[in-house]
Length: 265
Image 1 (cartoon, rainbow, N blue to C red):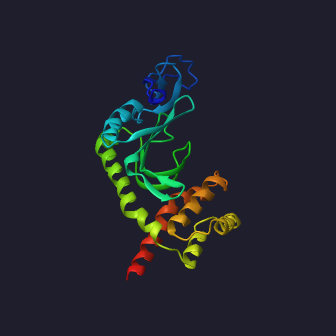
Image 2 (image 1 turned 60 degrees about the horizontal axis):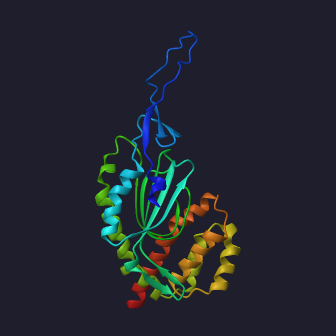
Image 3 (image 1 turned 90 degrees about the horizontal axis):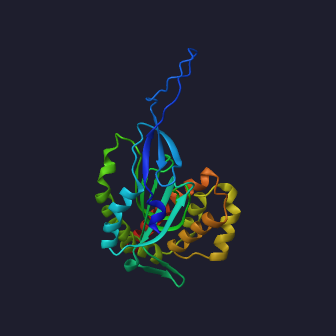
């Protein structure tokens, strides 16, 4: 699967003509821009400034693959978008599966994303995901997110090994420490109210109908109602929806932790 995103790329300086009235047709070889080109097809993937630091898919995957596989990670999905200017790979750790309900089994996952057009930096996102969008957004549980822009001044791009290792470890911890609390802690009416407040007011009817149909009892149930609505029942072009995606798990987790402490006390 990986071969679809491991194609060779190169940088080609962008040249051009000066935009003045002296009819000088001498090519400018220092325009401050460069092309990112697929070597196997000669397709231009993007035109970037010289400040753009090319980080190849091959470089990222060659660093990540042995570390992930040494932890028994398995490649589950590879996506390439456009002419290859964006890529996503998803890896799963089946040894750490957790059965959350009769029909809901989840494993820790890592999504590694990159682009050659600046839309997505080097992204390493860990958690358990319900859906991954073409722009790099994820719906689900984000345990840790590493994002680095393609800038020559960004030296931390050279530390991918430690980032991947740390990200994996954090993902496994949420399955061990956080999920049991969400599954075992019962919600109350005030939690439903706070849950509704997370969503745009125009989605109130959809959320209410989903709550009635699913009758959530635990915080995990509540989280699943939210992810189902976000993945199937709302306009995903609205920015407010993406804001909810980012806030849903952290807010529900905070409510669950607070309620669990009260119950223990």
